[in-house]
Structure formats: structure tokens, C-alpha cells
Image (cartoon, rainbow, N blue to C red; front, side):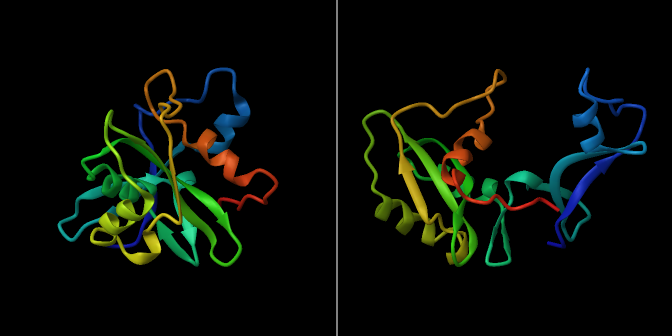
Length: 165
């Protein structure tokens, strides 16, 4: 795969802006270009693959980690019902992956078992350094998308958040 890049789009099908939200519109529009917030790579055959949202990429020790890639690996475990991976602060690495995991009813899984499972699927630097199990459903938007920023906030209380460039 090639270098990760930000997805931008232009055309008649692109929105003019967010309804009654000029600041949010200015943040994503550049002239007629719409910055989607998605990060993508082109593969060797010329196909584009969305790897993550720009604001959800975890930068750990200078390495970009796709939260989606880590989530897919966690979802592969038969005991996992749902999960979310977010950036948590770390003194040495800047950020590290933190996983919030909901198990299927009646299932059991320890952090050690999950990490052992993930070691065969992810590079060591992509492994979650924090694993939290919860019996509660993860918070979702009205369309059913997990509210990762809400989950991320608790790790960053009192810490300086990195600036997205």
C-alpha cells in the first residue's frame, strides 16, 4: 500500500455547507473542495481503501495506527460483541491504542487472552495498551455509529490533546 492521504472531493454532488453552522462549514470546505475527514490509501491495483477518520488515527511514537484496523482484529475474537478503539495519552509514545470492549452474553475474556489473540493479527506497536471491558452498550449516535470522541474524552481529562494537522 502507498502513503495515507486525506480524502477530498469536488463536484455537483458535494454539499454547500452545514445547515446554520458556518464555523463547521469553514473547517471542512476549501474553495469548492470538501475535506471529508477520511484517510485513504491507493493499493497496487489503483483501488482506494478508506483506512480511518483523520481525527481517529492514533499517532504512537510517530507511527500512524488505524483504529479501524485494531477494531477489526478485536472483532475477530468470538467472545466480542462490540468494541471501539481510541487514542489514550502516553508519556513516552504520545498516544497509545485503548480498547473498550463489550462481550457477548455469557462470554468471558481477559485482557491477557485478548492480547495473546491480537499478537497474531497486529504489529506489537498496534496492540492496545489499555483494555477496558464493559457490560454496557457503547454510546451511539442516532444513526447507530459509536461515539468514539465521547469514549476518548475520559482518557484525556486533564491532559493536553494533540492538534490535528
